Amino acid sequence: MSKKQFLKMVILGDSGVGKTTLLQQYVTQKATGNSKPTIGADFQKKEVMVDNQQVNLQIWDTAGQEKFQSLGYAFYRGADSCALVFDITNHKSFENLAMWKKGFIENASPGDVNTYPFVVIGNKLDKEVNRQVTSQEARQWCKDNGDIPYYETSALENISVDSAFLEMAKTALKRGTQNALFSLPESIGGAGGAIKLNNFEDRGGAGAKGGAGKKKKNGTCC
Amino acid sequence: MKQEILAGAARRKQSEEPSQTTSEDLLFDGPKPEVLSLEEWALLISGERPLASFSKDRLRQSIVKGLPQGVNRGQVWCLLCDYEQDRINHNQELYQKLLDMENHSQEYLISKDIYRTLPDTKLFLSDYKQGGNTLFNVLKAYTCYDNSVGYVQGMNYLAAILLIEIQEEIKVFWCLFALLFKRNWRMIYDINTPKLMNLLSLINDRLSKDDPALLNHLKEQDLSLGAAFSPIFITLFIYQVPIPIATRIFECFILDGEIALIRVLLRMLYCKRDRILELKECELLTYLRSGMIVECVQEMEIEELISY
Image 1 (cartoon, each protein chain N blue to C red):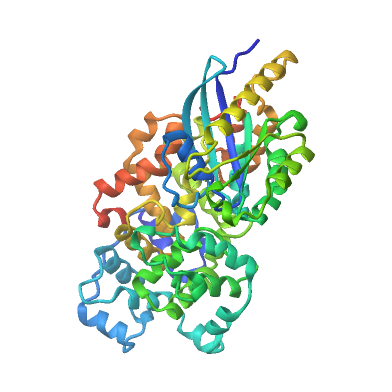
Image 2: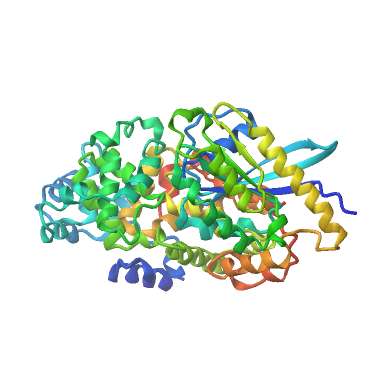
């Protein structure tokens, strides 16, 4: 049975909901709250212990702007877990969760969508006075979308950031073990993700002249 | 080889249409013409001599060497954007009318980025709702004009660097109009960023001719050129390099368009070739996205970086 010690995670959500700050807080325990808008995608690494197992996390921070979604698709492949982030003081960012989830499912080929380890994060708890999305409303959405775990965080004040990421890691590990039972490919990304990448690459990536597509993908960057 | 260079230069002169760039245009070297004298700069800025009376090669050389003291960079940029005829052809109230329009979805997107655009300059911190935020204003006006593309991240950097040098909102608006709309740089901000795809394949072609080993290495590492280089093109280097250097690169972009950006990038890639060949996978991606650029900017003279 495979004990996967490497996990790839992606963070999705509207521009300005705090994705970069969440990641910054989680990885460096510091957050300035005025990070640059993310262009394309960036990643950070972190080593954590989950259920007495050492796990290397590679967390991808993506651009929140809709127009750049096609740039993000290349990074969705092979993701073991996905955080959908909205800003509790911004109702529109909550409404857009469905769009982000759909884009992820269509491009990451995540296998059985119903058991895929999503986590929903309502960020900016430090701005509670300006809240536009109630916890109840968010929880209901999570329930309707396959009982996704819901966390309310403040990336700025480090509230519940660790627990949200830990939840992602835990469920991803659990699912990885279950999948191994059904002898699925070693990585959830598999061939589906590779095809998506080739679509992207054909429009100008390094693999444009062939070559990259022939290589066996392990569904991860590292 | 020499013929190729000349052919490339001839093509550049014939048309400024960015979509006609070919990888042949990216060859280095070429004649080194005389820079403009102070008198010539004065005549150009005062309008006594038109821009077209100076050869592009001389203008390029002058910009690579750096504008002389006393020449106002903002005025030069306005001239190079060459928007005057368009300004005259449009309603004189256009800018004000665009500012007065209601466009909540664009305003919402813009408002999220203005305070985090070049925050160290502290230039764009005033409350946009009060009307005093110049960055918000020019971006709003432009995106109301070009509503089909609308506001996209990256435009904020372009507008910000223009504002730093030009200050007057209305002039910056016309520069945005010239660069984004007239010269079609807006296609880098359109859905699926078609212009970016085009530029990446140009880089791919150029590398396959000049340095197949380097390209092969990138392919073997399964590297997405889009992941590595999108910030460079979407923000014209302004995202990653200190403002004074970004300003010089941007100045070349105003003169020569996208070729300037690709050439700077290629120069960096060739300069850091050995390091790139050592790196793999994630480390390689991170290096190309930031380390390489930071090192080149620190180690190379600006003139060396932008001369071609």
